[in-house]
Length: 163
Ligand code: SF4
Image (cartoon, rainbow, N blue to C red; front, side, top):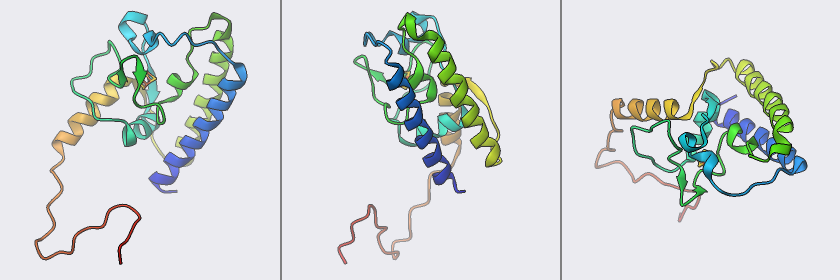
């Protein structure tokens, strides 16, 4: 299975997570505090696979990223809602939902780990800011892609061809 297919499988798993959370129906006060980690006194952990999916389509962010808040929260809203990791999908501060939240998290963490094992991928679990800083540092070390030679035909982008 290619990396793209693995990411697709993770997104399919996320759809199952969203359905399980919707069925539980936790209350959200939309305070946005849960994404301001220091203020809320918690840490968002995620796996390397979730970080890959998140960073494949999340908006750009500035580094260094601190452990205090998520750089994807803007005006109290998540700007990385579609690829956000498991913890963001499952967590709600509704006190009546905490036990269900833990059960959903355990179930889907196991499934994510099984996906990693099935695809021979290493499994690493770390706070969000660690992955964000590492990814940016790695990108800065990589040389920029070479420009195509002047005689090369222009690369096509997107799915529409005018030919
Ligand atoms: S990714 Fe979105 S939901 Fe998750 S902590 Fe950041 S802003 Fe909040």
